[in-house]
Length: 352
Ligand SMILES: [Zn+2]
Image (tube, rainbow, N blue to C red; front, side, top):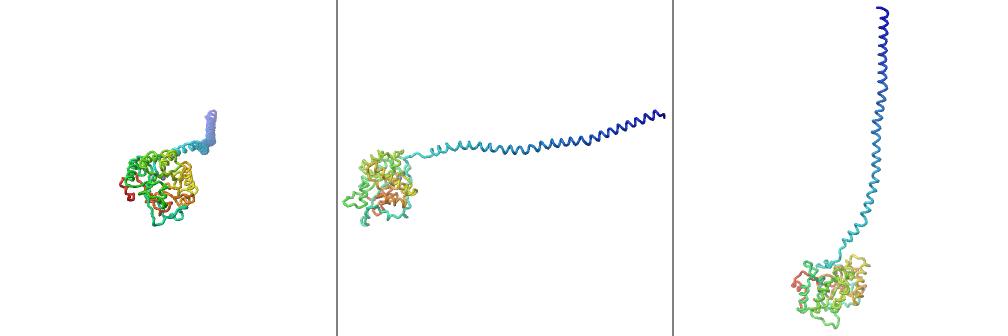
């Protein structure tokens, strides 16, 4: 082998070694640096998008409620003012001529009330030997209202008045009634006296009852609540005057037909005395005989009646009125508008 050929092989091998070494160095450099940079960047990119959005939504959510709570307030404010009052106004019932239905049957629990201390001033306590007993009939509205026991039809009232007239009963005025109860000397007792009373002051009393009673020349007593004058279905003062001129005694039944035991003493005074005052002023009469609205009273009521000089008071306790009852607890006979003439007759004492 010659020298040239040996040199050629030597340099070729040397070049191959350098090439191999270069490639090794290049590959070593690529495997140590480049991958770490890519990984770090990848980690930063992958971490930052995940971690950043998490706190933001909470802040955004917590910033929403103030907007929501502010919105309902004006909405509620709008709903508060107008609607409620208008609904309440609509619910207040217009006064109707429907009678006070509570006035019906069973006597109220009045036994616990002490009455002996409430004798009116100037009333002579009658002796037991001269007992006076008079039926006091208790009517209300006189019109046609089938099924309502507190209302009697004009036809039935006519029938009952005719019966009284034809069978020797004598409806008397309130003053005659009191004279009889008090055994007033010199008073000639009429035959089979009866007192006709009408409660509440319905306009039909002047339209229906007055002409019927006038036909028989019967007087009556009306217990009215002046606070309801000119309300729908109730008498006005002009009509009350007509009744007065036709022989009806007009007496107080509370200003507004209240449940007296539910009121304070002060309120009771107003209800009792104002009703009396108005009737006396408007009609120029004496109105010191009371009638309990709903038949209700308490110890305060009895005390006030005495203090203010009332002479008598009527309940809805069932029975004939006698001079042995407390003057403030006079009984009456409720007239059921649905009952037959026979039932009416059975309520009355036998005529002499
Ligand atoms: Zn009444």
